[in-house]
Amino acid sequence: MQERLGVRDIEDWARKVVSDHLPEQHRAFHTNQPFLVVSARDRKDRPWVTLLDGPDSFVTSPDPQHLVIASKPAPGDALEGAFEVGADIGILGIELATRRRNRVNGRVVATDRGHEVATEFLDVFLTRKEEQLKFLDWLAWCLQNEGDKPAWAPFFYSSTKGSGKSTLSKLVGRLFGEENTVTLNGVEKLTSRFNTTDGTNPRGFGNYRPLLAGRTVE
View 1 (tube, helix red, strand yellow):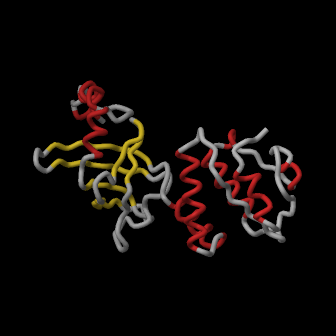
View 2 (tube, one colour):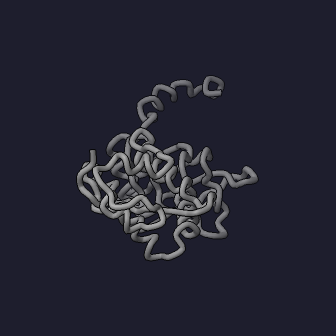
View 3 (spheres, helix red, strand yellow):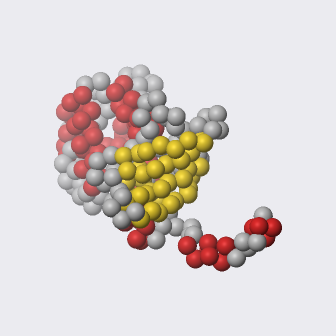
């Protein structure tokens, strides 16, 4: 097509300005904008354009291949629900004061639906909000202080199967990394790894306090 139109030399120009990653200056540019212009196709394959905005730092760039946008189309927007994993999107950043523009083409590789599902699960698994917040605070501390042993650890017990303990373990394992996670079945296997405990009755959380809170393990 370019040859037929007599503009074949556009390839040489394009190779100088189009890349497979975001240069550092483009990452800084996009993450400093108060809004982004985003194009995509709706579920009927029709193209639309919308604006995504948010508070300061609603756009971040963890690496040269990714932009993380903490915003989504408003309810009723033509592109509501269109940004699913795998969707092709075009992003235009505009700096109104200088009229500078940068364009990014890419594909959605993740959404916040995983966060929503996890929140829904915790609402069912831990029905008391204070317990849920305490568990999330403990989890956040462990992830932020990987080299330290926490002063306590949660212990979940259920007399029936299907209560969600295994699902929670899998979720936490994904956060810490499967290579850093071990699943043990049975109280004996758990207690044998610690120096001491004053009880093995799984119904009594207090019996496990030395095991969970002690700072010395074998």
